[in-house]
Amino acid sequence: MSTPPPARHSRRPARSHRVAVGVTAALVAVPLFAASGAFAVYQHLNHNIDTATDVDKYLGTARPTTTATADPLVDGYAGRPVNVLVMGIDSRAGKNKKFGYVPGMRADSLFLVHLPADRSRVDVVSIPRDSLLPRPECTHADGSTSPASTSSIVNESFEVGAGKDGNLTTAAACTRKTVEAVTGVRTDEHVVVDMVGVGDVIDTLGGVPFCVPAKMDSKKSGLHVLPGKQVFDGRTSIQWLRTRTGVGGDLWIGSDLKRLDRQHDFLEAVADKVHSENLLGKPTTLLKVLDRATKAISVSPGLGDLRSMAGIASGLRGVDGSDIEAVTVPTASVPHQSGRVAWTSAADDLWQRVAGDRPLVDPAPKPTSTSTHTTKAKPRPTTSPGVCG
Image 1 (cartoon, rainbow, N blue to C red):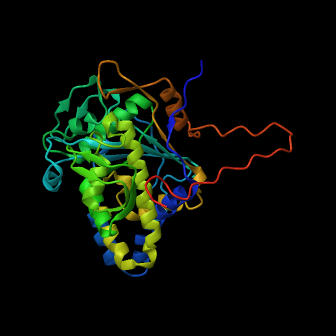
Image 2 (image 1 turned 90 degrees about the vertical axis):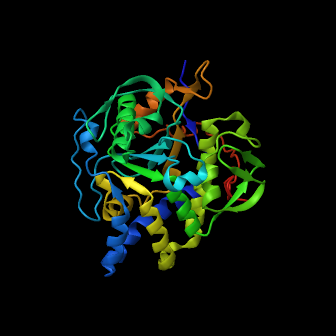
Image 3 (image 1 turned 90 degrees about the horizontal axis):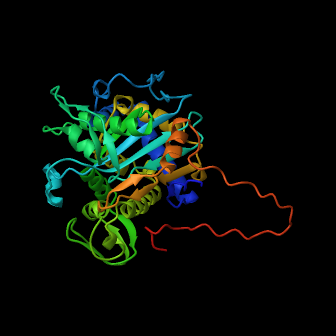
């Protein structure tokens, strides 16, 4: 019996291309400022980035070796694949208390970005936060350790690794170790994104137009939206990204997988907003956006300089939307554990593809018929569920 394919997000070629172009443009912009003499601007933005300089010591020594270099404005991973684990944190401390205080620090969103050695495509694998997985022993900044677990939800790895002092470096390291142990895939770099920072970026952009499919109310996240076209400010955006349960739409299901779909739609709407703003032609707005964005992230050393990010991004300039594939790890519900999911056997094939630098999904077979009959292609959608026509 064949195993089911991984869940795929609907891929929208034109919009995906905007994502690639928007990200590349933003990353390349800062080095251009530096080259033009505005070095103080580059230094300011680069100083904003929190770099986990000592993360390697918490990842242990039993890891594949690397031959990466770190030449400015050059892809330090050129000629080999690179995997970046992205973690969106859901801390409710500090500024985040206004969204409802909850103790601890969690990785509310988790996905792996795989760039192949030839930089011909971008693969994105979303990891459901409620996936039950084994967790290895993790080390804290003070030298103490947290015991391994045979089964816990994957987003707890971040909280466990953070320890009592909420250390982002050890939190990211514990999450990376967990993902590496269960997938067999090396995570070369990581990015931790803070929710409040996302809200600040959206407010700086003047909000994001979004089409809400149905009235939704969530007492837990504070989300209250009506159906139809709206402009989400930073606060509403964060509530939308966090909401899993409530009334209206598909919130009654309480599914993290449904939330992943909603997050995907919203991030595409953000990409449209960035694209439509033509930020490279508006240096004042661009600098404000980059200032907010760089303050919202903590990264591993290989991404700790904006020139390094630009070097990697420059290698993707030829990537078209049809070369961007986004999938979710195949899962099945866990009996008697509401909301928890376990990876199916199809996940093994998925991670073997990533480790082997192979496409996530096999290309469609070419037609073998010699018939002259042709089928009219379905028109590509011009908008996503997140943007009203």
